[in-house]
Length: 63
Image 1 (cartoon, helix red, strand yellow):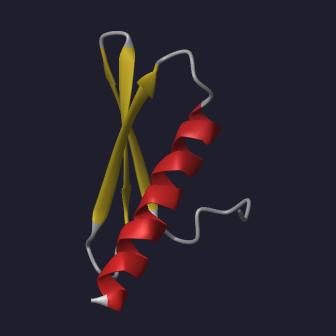
Image 2 (tube, rainbow, N blue to C red):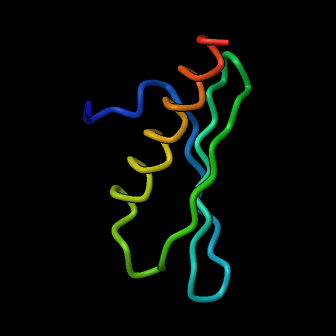
């Protein structure tokens, strides 16, 4: 995966011992959400959310 987030908006919200990470594609306005432990590296959680967003964007293209 590329080092850059490819123009996606990534938001982190701490909820207790968890963090909710949302990746949003500003063009299609589709979003993907993942939840992980607060102790996980932010970069790793962001990459996971972006991979999930890529999956959702590709899935909608196929339909």
